[in-house]
Length: 171
Picture 1 (tube, rainbow, N blue to C red):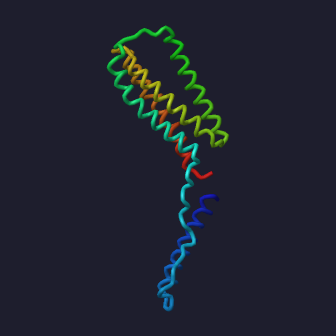
Picture 2: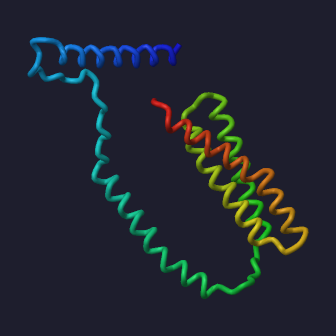
Picture 3: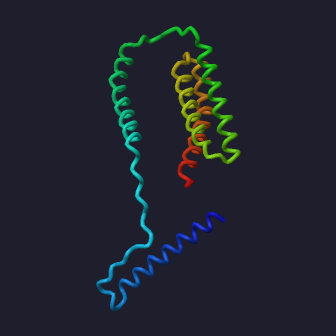
């Protein structure tokens, strides 16, 4: 029903535009100015605080670029992490929570599922990245790649698609 109403509105707007063109071209209306009935709305300018926050984030991102060189040249090739299992269990727990929250919100039709989906997609991509880059050569690496290609990245793509679809729909 929604799609039909939108289609009818689009059809009506096209008919009005054609009518405007016909009126402008008719006899006696040589100098007539046609004022369009429907113009594209301009995007509202963000509030000053939002603009400042945006430029602050851009500056922070740019400041991180030289830091990447420091890390790339200064970090040791190997390291031992004291709480290695806790780090991975924590990451996977956050992924599980994100998938559950996204699923429940999406199933209820709650538009906030876009936020959970975006965060979950990010966690899944990070997991795939760290799994493959920290895996030992051989079987561990093959398992990491299989998990990334078979589970983490497809789920990240699904979550990303859900987030983008929700954000592209009008409220």
